[in-house]
Image (cartoon, rainbow, N blue to C red; front, side, top):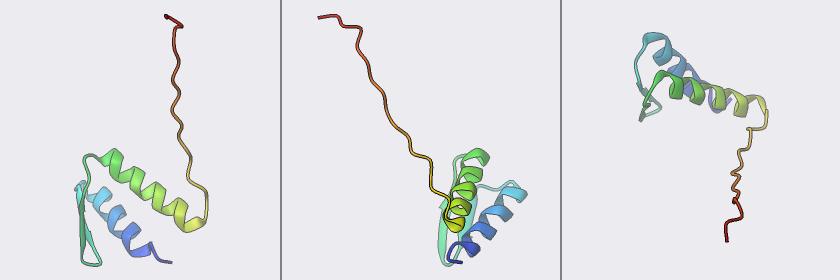
Length: 65
């Protein structure tokens, strides 16, 4: 699939404890291992056809007018 090379590179970086990943002539630096793991999860979900979770924003007011 299209993301196999990227996933492999990310998994190797995660296992090695590094945050900068290079694949297919591209370079990405992640802020943390958690962010790197999140990227792996997102790509695997895309690859499997699983829909990405959607986030929404909620706002409210105390009614002070």
